[in-house]
Image (tube, one colour):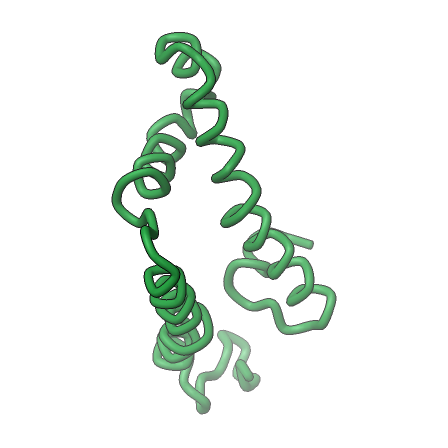
Length: 113
């Protein structure tokens, strides 16, 4: 499945399942693995193990996980989950519908939706 389909228009059940798996893995598996690697290795060794093109993004996610978005209480976890739900299933959908309104047509004149 092309990445652009997964990220922008997962309109078939296979697309939505793959999108959900990718999101879940990135949010809960990859972030945890990155943090564990960061905490278990000397800083220089860890930094040298990162791919140059993803180094900055990985370090930002580690900082978010350990500092910026770190929940302290159960209530923090509930707030995080609610805001994440709002972003994924309300805000992003509204933005998509704003960018591609119901009457949108493609370059060949067929309806987009």
